[in-house]
Every structure is written in C-alpha cells, then in structure tokens.
View (spheres, rainbow, N blue to C red):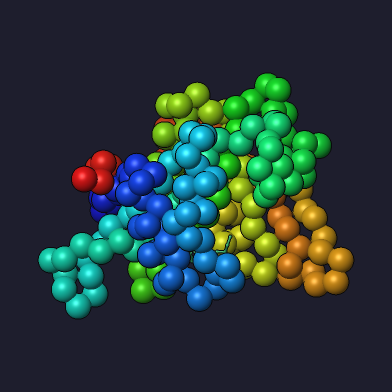
Length: 198
Ligand SMILES: CC(C)(COP(=O)(O)OP(=O)(O)OC[C@H]1O[C@@H](n2cnc3c(N)ncnc32)[C@H](O)[C@@H]1OP(=O)(O)O)[C@@H](O)C(=O)NCCC(=O)NCCS
C-alpha cells in the first residue's frame, strides 16, 4: 500500500508553513496568515499536519502538497470567531459530555488531488485526537464547496446542522461531525509515516 509521509509541526514552525500553503488555493477567499494561526492556537491544544509528496518536475524532491489544521473547541469561548462557532454549535454538540476537536482549515493542492492525501491527513488527525482524549471532531464548510462536501461524505462525516444564508444559498453553512472511537481508528484505510518537522 502507498505510504503517506506526514509532517507534524510546532506552532512557531507551522504557522508560516500554513500561510505559504494557503497561497496555492484559489478557492480560499481569505487566506489565513501566520499571525492569525498564532493568535488562535497559542493557548489551546492544536495539530498542524502537512502531507509531503514528490515534486512534479523533480521526483526526488519532496514538497508540501496538503495540509490540515485543527484545535480544541471549548463550550465557552471568548475569542470572536470561536465564540460565534461555539454558540452556533451549542444546540447540537454536547460540550459537557464530550471533548470537541475542531477541524479548522485544510486542503490539497490541485496537482496532487485524488491521491488520498486528504484522507491520510484526516485519519491522522483522528488518531491524534483520540490519543489526546478528544471524543468528537467537528468541521464546517459551505454549500458551494462541492469537492469538500463530497470528500467529507466519503470520509463518513455526518451532517449536524445546516444554516441557510439569507440571500445566497451557496454561502449557507454546513456543520458536520464524527465521533472518535477505537473502532473508527481500526477502520482507517491509509498507511502513514509521521515525522516531527525539524
Ligand atoms: C476537497 C479536497 C481537500 C480533497 O483532497 P484530496 O487529497 O484530493 O482528497 P483524497 O484524495 O484524500 O480523497 C478523499 C476521499 O474523497 C473523495 N473525493 C475527493 N475529491 C472529490 C471530489 N471532487 N468529488 C467526489 N469525491 C471526492 C475521494 O474519492 C476519496 O474517497 P475514497 O477514499 O472513499 O476513495 C481538495 O479537493 C481541496 O483541497 N479542495 C479545495 C478545498 C476547498 O474547497 N475548501 C473549502 C473550504 S472548507
């Protein structure tokens, strides 16, 4: 089976790497900057993963091709966007009984799509979250992100909530989730090697 090479980053090293990765995604309207990652993640548990693969023109050279960043989400948040997120999830996520991990941002660069990179990152995030005592992963997307919705469907996320946009249904938000259990980890399909980024 093909083995995915995943690098796990500390926040200091990972924040500029994610800022760099975001530039490759035309579909992201607001590209996240390093300082935004630092602000959001510095006081909460988080995971920054990047999947590596051979460069197209130089197969001996590995380049970053996909990324996924997630963090702990508390029932009571004080920061603007997280306060809003926790508020929107309050009627469908049981924060008092479950430790919740929020899968914040991620994607695979166009040329490397369809090779299982996002599945590998998702499965690695689930494995790590389980090892850290989280019970549930929550993710948010929009109606218009069809590839992401299809991918989350393939990755067995269930819809938690749909929030219609007042004027433009393509902008409507979809919240999805998955409970993390040993059975879930046993059902993983990808083979992965994880390195701490030096
Ligand atoms: C969505 C995205 C992350 C998928 O990345 P990827 O590395 O190509 O995904 P994978 O190869 O790991 O595929 C995972 C699963 O999703 C399925 N899938 C991936 N893209 C799909 C698509 N466009 N349509 C249908 N299914 C798709 C795959 O078939 C696979 O299923 P399987 O493992 O059961 O066979 C990538 O297309 C992307 O970054 N898109 C832009 C990001 C975006 O729009 N973000 C919006 C903000 S939420």
